[in-house]
Image 1: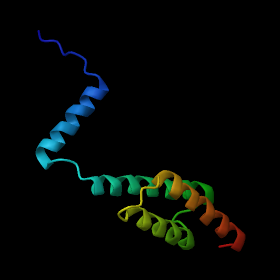
Image 2 (image 1 turned 180 degrees about the horizontal axis):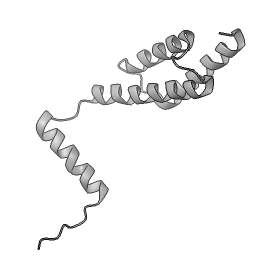
Image 3 (image 1 turned 90 degrees about the vertical axis):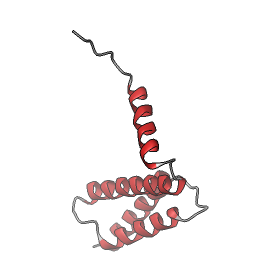
Image 4 (image 1 turned 120 degrees about the vertical axis):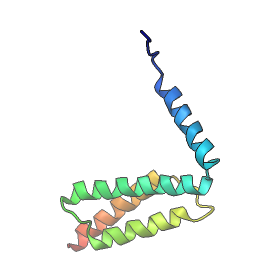
Length: 101
């Protein structure tokens, strides 16, 4: 009977990355950045949803976060998307609460 040797998660991840690179070619830095911004944008929207307690996100907040995310996707903008969108979410929520819905 054959046994299955345990594989460390980092080995699985390396294998998965190698497989994707073999199938699709080398990673694209711009696409990687877009994905990083997308994840940070989704996290900021989720935080807003929890803070406001409603869905969809109030339009003023959604517009503010979308503008920041668009700025982060431009070439040459190497700011941390999580930090920048988190700060933008905090500012947009404060403005929303100060002016009312």
